[in-house]
Image (cartoon, rainbow, N blue to C red; front, side):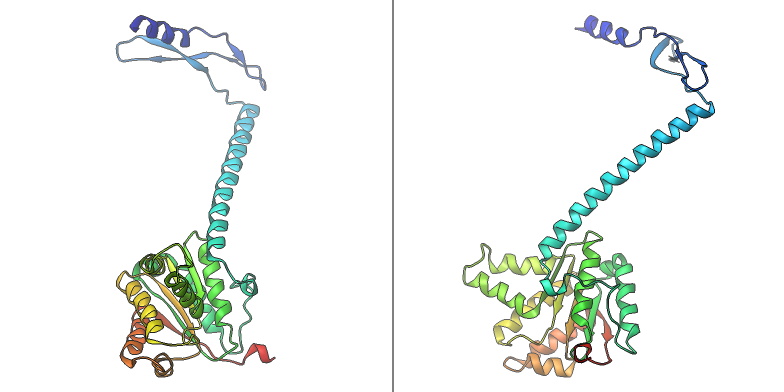
Length: 277
């Protein structure tokens, strides 16, 4: 066995014929390697020519390899983004929404600036567990911004859940009715553990003790685990508390709003309803 290995190694270090540089004609010799004992071994590679043609060829080869690697990385990235976007399942009406095509209501440039800065610095905000609390009247583009943020962060390879509040409740109802192959615990865990959760139109859903408990569980869980959450609503503070407590207890409703202020930057939105223009 040992002799066979020795013979195999020796076959790798047999003298190779000299080569000529195809660009300048210089003779290129086989390289050698000397070990500490003084013994010299032939290597299976040649000298590198430093003529202009050879240098240019190496640069071209390196550039081609770099381009190929960049393409591979881009394809891998796009595959991950496509998978995340598919999982997010953006409603057809909002698939076009980006920060770049958001129509800023007159006098509301600050909201877009805050949202854009948040997306740009999401890594730091994620560590702090901070989200956004967008509130204002109908037709100011809150939902557009919500889905635009979600898309932008999916493109940074973050797992995002972005749903209307009423659809979140429908998910939990489907779990309870056995329509989905999961438990209420696993459903809650998915909402609590996502890199980013976006809850659109909080307060529009039919509020009951049960629905309020679901939202409190989600927001409290994310608050405790420092997971960033973005909420959009037509209501603010007292109005939202009254809405959430309409058919439930005010204490839980107040707790939800309190959590929002502790885990999200306040983003008031003003202007005119663009749907009426």
